[in-house]
Length: 248
Figure 1 (cartoon, rainbow, N blue to C red):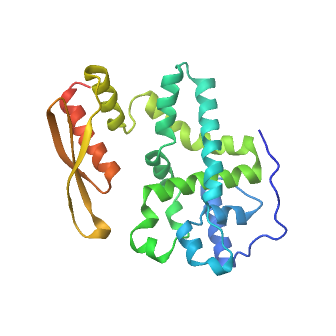
Figure 2: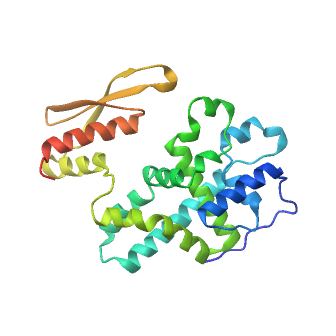
């Protein structure tokens, strides 16, 4: 599964200090690319590229698109070859393993946050440690490695990082998606879906906490807080799920 990618006539210039950073990342990650500009591009967030438009710097979104597909193929292939589940089980396992939470956790282990190029505004709002930015960057890195080294190489790299995550899911020790679990429970039992409602927000605009409640069948649970809507909904879903299923 290798494709021929168009080569640019001239690789973007990379300062020597940046080259040293990229080489250090490669050493710690256990990879070695021939084209460092690909890796540099993988670390370039759109906020940085937008602030440097005149220099022709490109963001990592195209690489992210490709990396998402490569990641899905590698994980799907591993599950098919090494586990005996059905399609539904494969989908659930894969959805966690390639999730924002899982990929951002891996990014932290590889110190990806230290190498990301982000804009000044994004930096001031904690962008370097945002799960979405870290997860997207990991997908872009996967694409860069795939383009430079081919499918067998990126397969080995991805599985080295993700097999432990897969094993956590198989042994039920992973961070669970309580929102999905609650929705499946409510749909099966009541033929309805839970309704999430924002109750309030607290804190300054750049560091807000959102509080949500969840309700169904006339029952309300919560509120529970989180740094964003998704996290708050997960937390209140966990609260509700735990109350409904104390032994699980």
